[in-house]
Image (cartoon, rainbow, N blue to C red; front, top):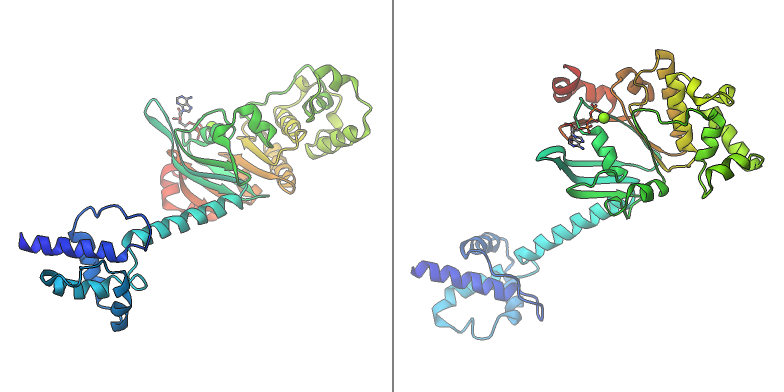
Length: 351
Ligand SMILES: Nc1ncnc2c1ncn2[C@@H]1O[C@H](COP(=O)(O)OP(=O)(O)OP(=O)(O)O)[C@@H](O)[C@H]1O
Ligand SMILES: [Mg+2]
């Protein structure tokens, strides 16, 4: 009992001595023994002069109390703020530095996801997911069925709202506060797994209808003579390998060409970030290889995130790979590194 009260006094004195002058008092220690032990440990390295220098901040009467004189001499040395900072002060400093580092990382990246979680009926489709895409980067996302790849894109594009976590675009734009239309207009274009083109329009008109700008469908189709617009359409048709098919109805394109046309329609909106979900599913080998070339060209002027199961295609892309599993990042790096990762082999490549 007597021991407890001495320890309590030590704790009280440490608190009083390490409190900055004029600052609000820190919260009470959760227990007397923890901080007292900390003080006793740090006491060993305290220079002799430090205790004297610290005397000024000691509360009046503490040193003159005969019952605590031994305790006071220990505390006087242990509580020098220059040598043994307040335990909560260093905690707060660490927290502040970590948050500053996070803020910097966020501002310097195009897409920043941290601690993102999304449950459907108690099942975590996305589980504490953290992912960073640099400006101008192309990233391939792989992972088994149900890994959460499409849900991740749903979250980025505002189709699904996460339960918790941070999703930032271009540094400071909190995407969780915006809806799909707003996010699309900010420069995030998304290609879904199934191509959605206007089948009864020509390839060229599909692109024209998608050009950014507040115009009605009629205006878009009537004003065909605009030279800058024509140049843009030509460039997009060239990129998407559809120049020779410009007058073809979209309904008559092959599956691969429809996928390219949809990519072209997204390019017409000039996105800064393009999200592409399984672009080569159902394509011929030749179309698959052409799509890798096409996306590499596109990635010269914007960031691209490509979800794909086809490892040959991912290798052709030649970019950093992230493997998702059960809603989290399982492995990240070059395709060689990721595909040699035993965790990846177990859950994905070795199925
Ligand atoms: N709206 C939803 N309601 C309920 N469950 C959902 C919903 N959307 C996704 N899920 C579940 O979340 C998990 C992740 O699905 P998601 O479609 O993101 O996986 P994926 O990695 O894209 O898979 P795949 O490779 O097959 O396309 C799956 O188990 C899926 O059933
Ligand atoms: Mg999917």
